[in-house]
Image 1: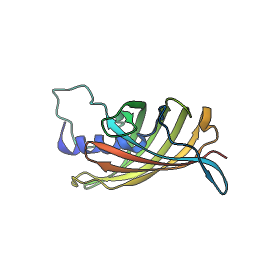
Image 2: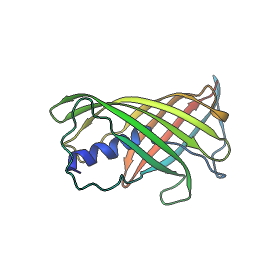
Image 3: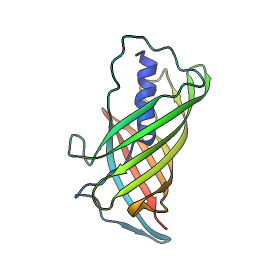
Image 4: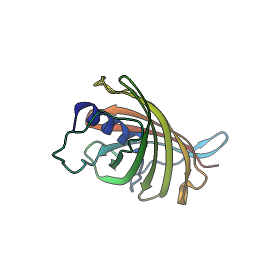
Length: 168
């Protein structure tokens, strides 16, 4: 895998890589306009199967997919997983726009699934990716009618995912 393809892979994984709860899940946070949750989790990409081919630079129409394991703390117990599908929609020099959609499985209480999406620009020449926000578009279980956002920030071998969810 080329350096830029690996970088895009790592960046896309965090695009919707996100949230799960275990028994040590945070308590719900009440907001003035309704009930919700605020918590932080750490996503670590599941390595894709090794290939002997070299990957070409991204081009419009490419559809990378990614999966993460989710942890309450770096190196802690696994508390969930996610799956992300992206589409490259624009390439301009080192700038790549990707439309990504993902589903997050949340274990424990509260539990359920969250969906999120983002149109995000990645700079394939930058070894230090920027933080970005994802829109929470829905959920199931304890997250029925969920809305809000997730802030994804690279954090070493992990992506730090800060959840701000309203369930009303």
